[in-house]
Image (cartoon, rainbow, N blue to C red; front, side, top):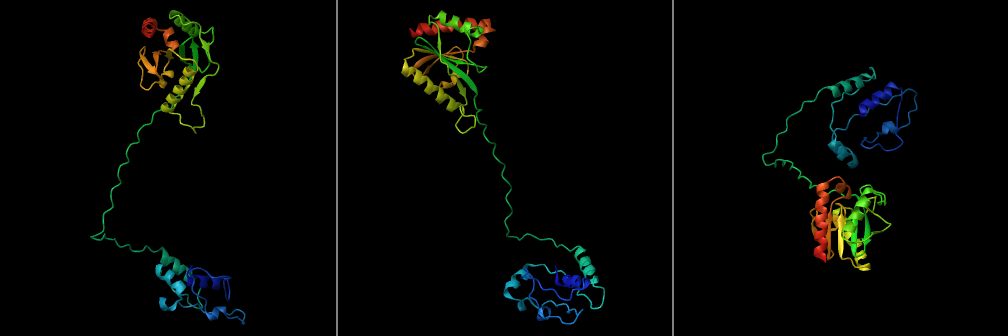
Length: 276
């Protein structure tokens, strides 16, 4: 608030003098007339005139007055309406100020255009699966469980798997109770991408192989085939930790596709004949 406007408000409120409790940032120092004790009732000190030059002000207020934009304010006239100065000041502030166009300096560098952001490379989606391990003699089986539950002996896919093992004279499978659910950490604190899944399945296969050596491996479904270093085609053989591995389709797909079932039989016979 400007000094003239403050003095007009004080006159309208019939306040003879007003002294703040503390120093006001940016305010000029009080004059001795304002600080003097007013003995006569109703005596109003004359409004303080603005300083003639910024050099007369104290050093602590000089820097602030240099950055402030001075607005033309008419001083209040003694004996007139105390709100007239306020109205006159508000009219002066509401007048549109003339804006002069600013020309760029000839040597000023032009702003550089914003560079287009490079597209972020798409990351590989995190796999989610459930697998279970079984052993039929020296044959190891990793089986994908699409429903996330172990196979029951009355399930049609279980009977189909038993017929496949019987065809290669592998015997009845011994199932592990614990199934592997991926990702292991639901909170996302551990790596859960395809590489982490491959490393984890490889470690599990290695522990089974070290406990009792495996001569062959069946990788039934897409999830167990993540353990291979390279993608394995359907009904093709590969190597997992030095053990021959055969990539087989989902058991549910074999039930509804007679042509795929016939091709699987031939692949099983060829795979086991080469191993022996």
